[in-house]
Length: 110
Image (tube, rainbow, N blue to C red; front, side, top):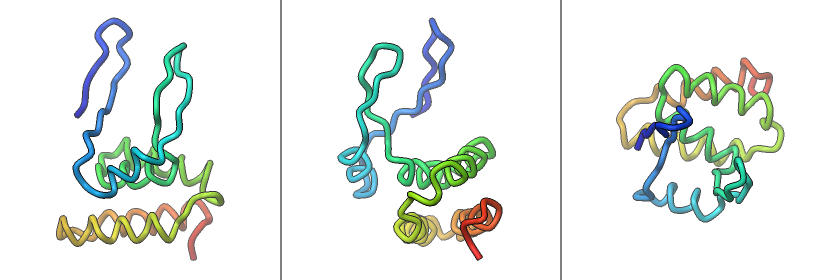
């Protein structure tokens, strides 16, 4: 769910868990302080999956940055497996193709 905080102008993405992946992502989210408020944010590898499933240009750019910053610490086989599952469900291999391209771009793939 895409929202917009009127007073601050900050865009907010809210995900309501429906799929097993989303439930797992919420369970493993990290708690952090954001402007004096404790919030839970997804692990970087889960965020890469969210971003590549959304597949908007900004999301793909964000996924590339996450891979560049956190790539060596991410569970890349898990990310690939999850993206494969989403691609099968969506009958669209483009998200996995984008992931593989980003791995090459960031020096994480062959």
